[in-house]
Image 1 (cartoon, helix red, strand yellow):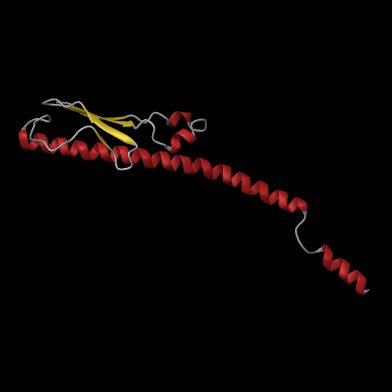
Image 2 (cartoon, rainbow, N blue to C red):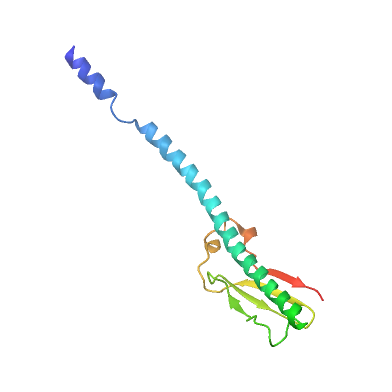
Length: 135
């Protein structure tokens, strides 16, 4: 009887191969899903940075027009073009006396995560933003 108890306890220890394969499969599926969400989040964060820079620059240009009567006045303290904080976008402008167009363009040569996901999210690669103020 003691031999049977030893064999029975040996059989209940550890995991079976099928249990390990199921766990590895579940982890693989969850990893594949999370990589997609992570890529979306990073692209969204990068675009938020560009939009914030455009909005801030537009506000500075509006202040310039309120103070000096024109967007392109030499006394304005708006330096263009410039790179965003993370150096992912370059903000440029075509100011005129009564209108402006701001553009956020991705900086060439910078490692942006969106390049890694190019095959996964091809519709999210157009990262050029415009903000205009007609006269």
